[in-house]
Length: 97
Image: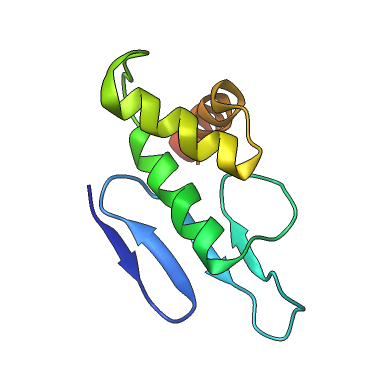
């Protein structure tokens, strides 16, 4: 699991999702590619991208990774199952394009 941080983007080695900084917008000004939500701070966007990696593929619903995913989702005010559904929908959309 690797996150890549650039000045205006946070990407991951596992999925085609990203967080993008929107300069010129009032803070918080980070947008997630997979979640239509209000803007996030850089720290929140980083946490959301970690959550993205944890929810990729067949995710067990027990163990440390699942507990971490739940903790991140809770801290962000996101329902972990809704996040998983949103990511699955994005994968389907990309598969059709």
